[in-house]
Amino acid sequence: MSTPTNDATYARETTLAVGAILSAAFDLVWRNLIAILALTLPLYLLYAIFFGTAFLGVFRLQMTGADPAVVARFAGNWPLFALAELAQAVLWLVGCCATIRLVHLRANHMRESVLASALHGAERFLPALGVMLVLAVALVIGLLVIELGAALLTWAFQTVAIGIVGMIAGVVTLFYLLLPCLLALTVCVTERAGPIAAIGRSYSLCEGYRWPLLGLTLLVAIILGIVDAVLVLVVARGLMQVAFGGIVLFLVGLLVFPCANGWIIAVYTIVYDRLNIAHGGSPAGPAVATVFD
Image 1 (cartoon, rainbow, N blue to C red):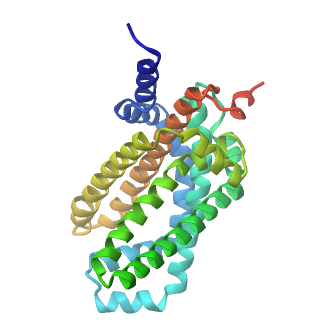
Image 2 (image 1 turned 60 degrees about the vertical axis):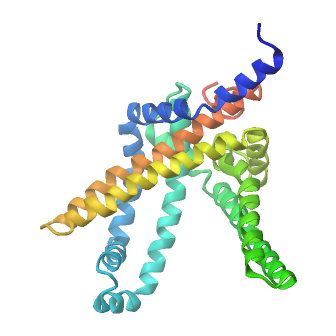
Image 3 (image 1 turned 90 degrees about the vertical axis):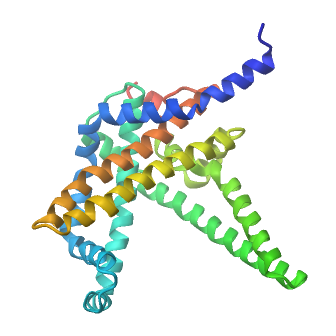
């Protein structure tokens, strides 16, 4: 006969069952692949139209082993490259907000048009930018504190080894503290929360689930690392050796990157829904649940 403690432990373990979440995310993306591509491809194409030259220049810089002629061309056009990076970041965040909206509704069997999801999601751009800026500032401050602490340890004990150990411990602690912020962007979009409220809500949802979240995040990073390695080391190098290889590579990227980004969003959308249920809430969240009322 099960005890309340055993039931609670089982519920906690199954809420963030990593295999089930990854599988459900793949299924969610596959079932809504056309909608996700329809939502994100215009953003990728917009970036390509205005900043494709800069992107290809960076790619050639990486693939040619810093050829002097390519380096000189890169140095002469650095403002364009900087603008391209800024545009990429803005378009990525807009796309993430819109995709979160779409994926979250589809995950909860609620339907709205791709255009409506894009508009409603894009409305959350400024609050989402606030979330990213707050987390970035917290990360920078944390890293500065860690570096200062490591320097003080090195000075106090007159050995670099102690400073390195302190730095490693600090990085682990910082990662542990920021890990519950993984759902802040999802909360910001789905619950229409402000930056601070979204971060606080994310902390509340993730309380007690840090280790499963860590395992899930590491596994997602490993999977994406393998995909990236295959694309760069195998596909990209092979295509750059043939005629029109750059065009084919660009088209491959148009399919792979939106799908990968959609899958990451699906993973953490499912996590958000499960943790919301675990804390006694609606799977659709307090705001989106009443969208169609």
